[in-house]
Length: 96
Image 1 (spheres, rainbow, N blue to C red):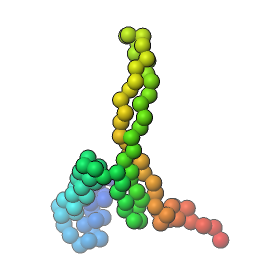
Image 2: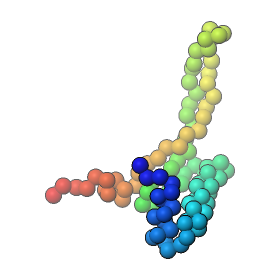
Image 3: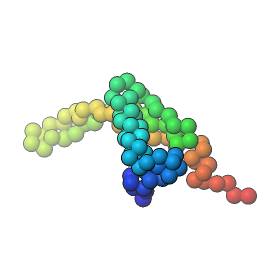
């Protein structure tokens, strides 16, 4: 598993910047994505990586043990990820 520190080192090496600058850039990317989803963004795409989409999950009927009644759970948002075609082809090369 690739760790945050390793990602920062790779970005710094490839972009020829310091690790502090790379860490700040990565943090800025993550914060921008989170802020966009919080505001009104429903979909964020990264061309070679894929698409992240905010979807609402429906409520579910749950059983409350104490009151012995069925209760609706709250609807929640979750993030759905779809890999890009470029990533899929890289992970699943065709056999010749």
